[in-house]
Length: 92
Image (cartoon, rainbow, N blue to C red; front, side, top):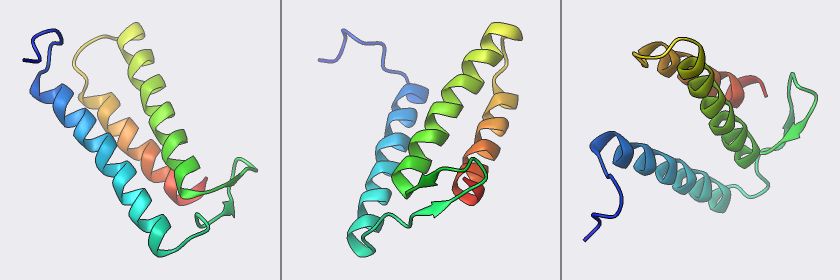
């Protein structure tokens, strides 16, 4: 049925993770409206959704830079991306 796209377990887990994060952000927004705005180290006033977007965008750049400069394996950029996400939600 979905033979037109190469669905693998890592691809499925990636999409499940992204949509789960969006669902959690939506639930948090419904429970506490306003997005928890704050001004972080970048000097931007961000909400939870902004911080999620910045962390996902940064993760993409980390992985692309790693693949372009070093190649496989991808465990190190995974750790860097997790650290970047924690930093974004903590300080940005």
